[in-house]
Amino acid sequence: MSKNFDAYMKLDKTGLQNKYVIIVNGTVVARGENIEEMLDRVRQEYPDEIPFVAKVPDERMLIL
Image (spheres, rainbow, N blue to C red):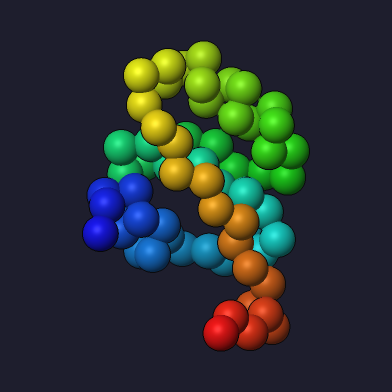
């Protein structure tokens, strides 16, 4: 597993349902609803890093 994925799995997702999170080097660097603006900002701040992007599912969502 990657450091970013591990950070996502350990993340307190309270209040983040149906929102995006972007993690770089194991740290959440952005969270919100507008993924395009968030990615533009993160790419400018961390040009040499590959960001981990995930949408936090609603607690009622069933993932198979």
